[in-house]
Image (tube, rainbow, N blue to C red):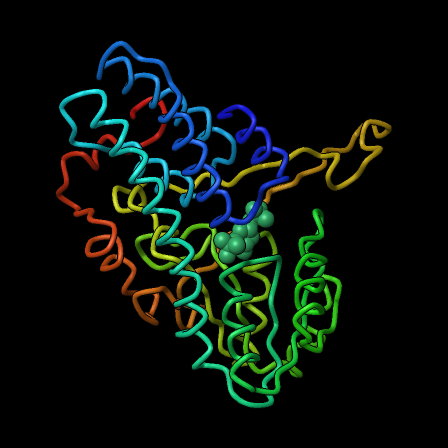
Amino acid sequence: MIEETAEKIRSMEIRGAGLIARAAASALKDFALNVEASGLEEFDRAMKQAAGVLLRTRPTAVSLANAVRMVIRHRAKDLDSARMEVIANAERFIERSLKAVERIGEIGSRRIREGDTILTHCNSTAALAVIERAFRDGKEIRVVATESRPRYQGHLTIKRLDEVGIPTELIVDSAVRSVIEDVDLVVVGADVITANGSLVNKIGTSQIALCAHEARKPFMVAAETYKFSPDTLMGELVEIEERGPEEVLENYREFKHLRVRNPAFDVTPHQYIDVICTEVGAIPPEMSYIIIKEWLGWEISDKEMQTSYFPEKL
Ligand code: RI2
């Protein structure tokens, strides 16, 4: 079950930062339910090993690390209570995560006005929640969606918007600057928000933010609190996942002097972000530390913080 879910996340059959986190929580729940262990120590060891397999699938998404950590942490003193606690943790995480997306839709949609044209990039459940909520509230809106090469997650976005009934234009990623004057605001999701409020999101996001900044168009990020990275408080840099060259150029092997690069994410500096809509409120990026401290429970001085939560240190 763990390996199966890990493979689906690796191959991006399961994708999107929130979905990955929920899938990991659900896999850990099943694992906790079924794993054979003679005692608490063996159970913890098995849980950590399973967590490591999931964590190694997609290195950038902090939602995965936050979910795994929230699920496997327990204070139980015996095997049965530990099992129950882990299962309850997983259920709580999944429920809260789904509620968070709904609440983000509610909060974020307040920034969308009647007649707005919204540009979005890639395929984000949280960003779509904002857009769909505005539409359901009766606002007449339009969307411009990018293709989001090389994996074309933009196609998932236009499919969803079409089902909902929102008029949408599809553009190639490089057309953003040409159309930005027709756009009223940008709404994107997040893979990671760092302690200083910068955004790590699908490759191309930072170019869009730059265009929006130049054109003085508001740039909104829709992100659950578990997309904020406690690790960055201790100066850790977010690892940017590099995916295979075949995603960009199928016949890349035919070239002798070519190296195809495929970074999956890029970093948008906090100066280009107007607001981050979370389930606990719409905050300026500079307030990210508060989210990490108050909502994720990490402090700069935290001892445990020094050890981070990557597999080998779990
Ligand atoms: P939600 C996606 O990553 C995109 O970068 C998207 O903006 C982000 O996850 C957030 O998605 P990928 O898995 O959690 O397609 O809002 O690489 O759905």
